[in-house]
Image (cartoon, rainbow over all chains, first blue to last red; front, side, top):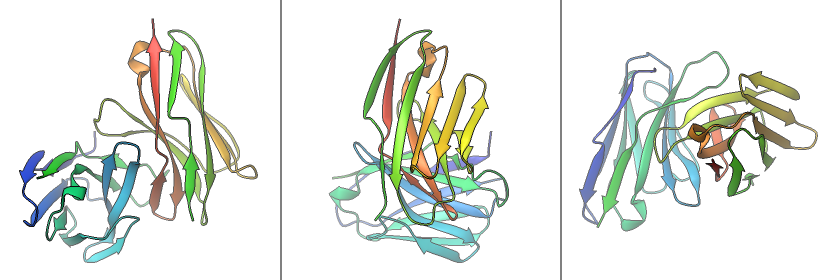
Length: 113
Length: 108
């Protein structure tokens, strides 16, 4: 199994507070991704990274920012959480070569009250 | 825009064969992938088709027709443990664009 962890696994917060989710990998893969999953929407890409300090927006990036200062860590920040950001967040990694397979972390369940 | 269409639910019996279809409209298409997800757990990779045709991996096969913007996942000899959600995803550069998923229920 790919070495990918997410923290925290569960979080409850209040509207307007900042929240940071962490994704950590031990595979030294270049590409990292953040998705959110909501009923009826499948998985939607928030942001992704193709190297240290190299990031780009996905389909649903409004209200989110990311940072990648080290290969192994990709942080997702909600500057001011809103109830619409209540979701399950998945991180994924992908190696450069191969069949575009992405390995997903276990997910973080975030509730914004 | 980009869109993928797949059925929301499919029900089949143990031992049967089931086909989950996926149609897509997108630019910058590299290939079509399929992922399985059990009860909100982490999605796991099943297959990837970059070229037209059938790819077989054990009981699972995946098909792609680029000219028809269409693909399917075929599951044979269904088992109870195959009950899960199945997502098709367009590979677009280094990104995946997912469909909304098909919930497969396997009955005894």
